[in-house]
Picture (tube, rainbow, N blue to C red):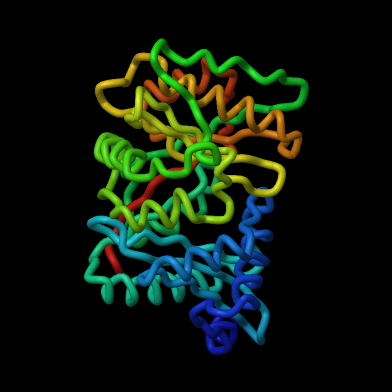
Length: 305
């Protein structure tokens, strides 16, 4: 049966909106709590020349999806296989195709994430030479009944939304570079165009939910949210090195929380931080976030196959 299924397996690039909808369908069966929007997937494809989305079908039925792209010294990748089609060689076939494309990017290693609560996927990778290189610990803030907090910015710091001050991108990027360099386990620094495509131009990154910390005309920090269905995800919260541990990050986080509550559109705020990023974990817990192990991820790295 497995051999028969593999003989009918067709792996192809996801290019049309129908292909992207097929990816979303697979994702809804694998991670029901996460629902990427077609417009965000389309934006990613249009803004990244070296991003490949893949869909695997058996008799026209989507059974798996994946992505792969160069990311610093490695190829970043992810595979999702519909539960009923696991242990039939589909994941191995997808990994082989991802590896072929990673080699085309000049990479000999692949890095990706699996859920902390998914030992089967972790074991699948470990059998193929992957090892844990980090972990992203998730936390959640339930918004029902919460009042918007005061921003309480440090003296001399002004917090504004990107909707109010849209021309601060160069300063924001300079802060993002410092943050990328200092995050434990980071694989490289994004170019300005890469950063802008994901942090600014992506449809899910709404300007009224992105906040900038200014001292005079200088950007000393920023924080952005990623809206998805009934949840908002805290993306990067970045503070310039000379302004860290002075209350800028917490003020930006409070601005985000207040803005999300005032929209009335979202049930919860989700965030994650690298397990070695102790200052950010403490800040999130101080703001009322609690651990969400069902969302936490293990970062795995291994050789192409």
